[in-house]
Length: 144
Image (cartoon, rainbow, N blue to C red; front, side, top):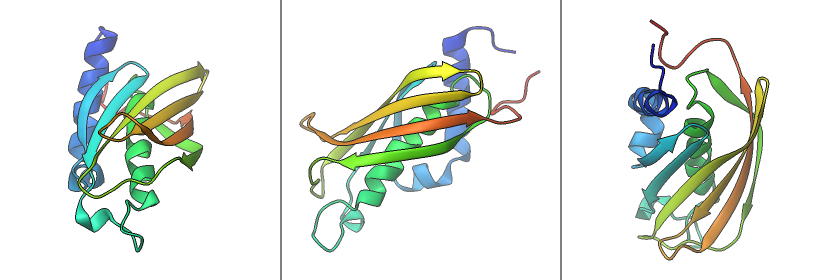
């Protein structure tokens, strides 16, 4: 069993990332994780553009949702989304790089609230996501 909270968050994130085929396939990079926090980035590829030639909102949502998942699972307790919302603030062009930073706001019992800010390469906010989490049975890394 890993006693250090930072080491546990990092080990949990590595295990989750290895199992997360979607995030890897989309080219998401796990930049940082710590208890209750995660930061991921993703380049906006041509195939991510919608009919308006801007980044599809669903892909911004997916990046934010992945950051949310890494943050709320950082304690090695299996945790899922119980609800979420997103506000899109500005369009994103192809070739830009998005960064999603998930920050735990509240963790009370089995439930948490996380705010995720998505910014473009210039650091401008492009979306704000709020996720509500619920802990379920099990662990990301099996306890020894």
